Length: 252
Image (tube, rainbow, N blue to C red; front, side):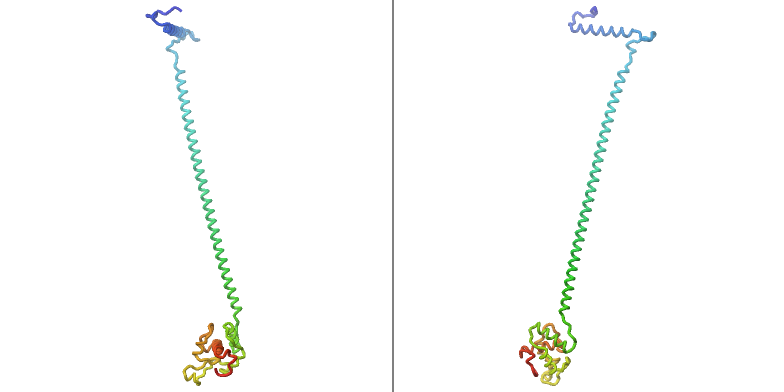
């Protein structure tokens, strides 16, 4: 190829020269391509007529790809957020279920404890009631019943005297009662010296008030006319003074 006729060309370096030659060759090739006829014999194509469509399509494809990537990122973010929200809701639901289960268990335990306590209290009350009933029954069984007559009064007095350690026998008591009152618990002496002194003898064994009060036996009536109280007090006095009512054979 002949060297181009460029002013100052001879002053350029070897590298510059090669570059200039390359540029000139490229320009010549472009011109030659522009004038080459296409399949259409009547059409002529110049360098200015070449379309820039490939460049535009590439830009649109890049934009579409970028937009697609943005949409994918947004979709992935939305999915992650939905997943996290679902996880939070599931955790909250699980926590609520566990709390409800725990509360139900606590309420059941409290109810069971209350029922056990109530049952224990009922059992204790029933035991106490049975014990009280048994004590009352035993006491009732132990407590004798006596006929309301002279025989019953003497026998009841003898049982009391036995508990208190007061000596005396049925025969000795009965004998002195018959002599003193004839068996009348309301008998009263209004004519002897005691009556004259204002303290008449009273009851089955004709006991004056000061003697009855001094020798009254605990657990008996304070009424001197009460037959059991009268007999027991008189026997207590006779034991103190004569050793026993059995030793009394006349006024005492």
